[in-house]
Figure 1: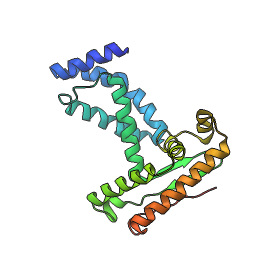
Figure 2: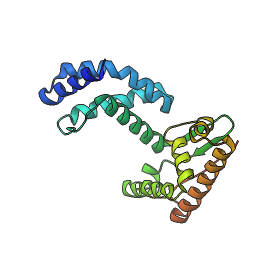
Figure 3: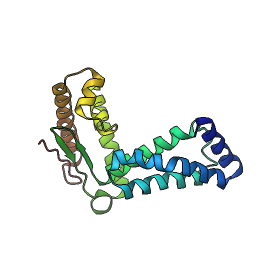
Length: 195
């Protein structure tokens, strides 16, 4: 399906509440989005749930989403963001050829923190990431958000793999120190392992 067709379907959905157009859009993108989300979640059932939630959300908010110029990009972006949110909610697992880092945020939502405290924790985590040196921050985001391997990051950044590994190590150490100062390790678990 071309971009123009997708946009026409989206226009019909928004302007006419066209359920048929929505079903065509869903049928066209659902399998592709499930494959895309699988690259993040590695679990078919979770992928289907995330993509279904995205479609339910755009149908429910169709009258509010007025500035979408490219529905395909919007669907992929929403799917990616929902996947990342799901990963963060449970745990973030990152694997590379020789290293495995695990940041485990315990089931804070229900056991340790109220929703407001969880929101504050996420804000503190983002602030901590923003305090990293620019290159370190960029490499860390490529690893976490884009799920790139050390080798891929090294090629993109024109750096050696060892430099990338060193920057990731610095990022984890700094984030651990910053977050421990804020939470004194009583509200969360922030672990990193080197294998």
